Image 1 (spheres, helix red, strand yellow):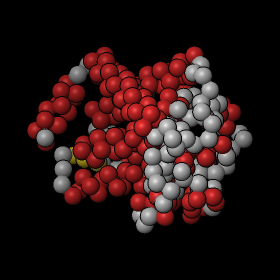
Image 2: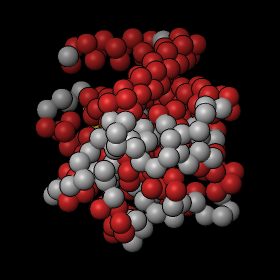
Image 3: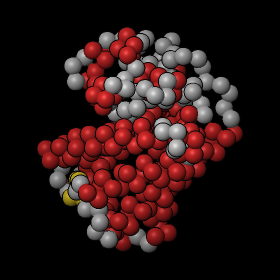
Length: 248
């Protein structure tokens, strides 16, 4: 596994800008397709546990915004590739317990920073032209994960690159984090709840956010700002009080 990762990193280091852009676009659109398919499978599997009303008919604008988001994510990835080639982002090869620690650090750092920036984006000075696009659709479906304004795509993308520039992580931790990020994002926008009603009351695991948690944010824009956990919402008093009792 380490040898294969080394070969992939070596190949990327030798690519031209055009080659890197091509493969990163392929990777991002593949991830997009997987998120949509997996999300729809969850919708079908847990259709008896809806969160609120069913989504309205799909609009062309939703599709265009989602595809634009995926392309812009590819641009962010290319910028990250350039930072890595120039030594700003450093990736190491450890795959043991240090990689596990890296995953925890990346999740906690990004969870806190995204909570803070998410709250800032809800300020009246920024909401309409930065984050308002994501709230155009209050009945989430898997595609809603990618319905973002270009400013928001670049904002969260550059936040991720900043964390990687400051914290030198292993390649394995970066891959695991990106997979978890896609999984959480998908679960947060499926419009059904796969978790049991007791989930928020489970020690430690109950701090992980659910589909209901994020769906409530789409309806109550001043509550539930967290992405991966409800830790910061609980700490700063922005969690929706009935959340613990609202899972189906």
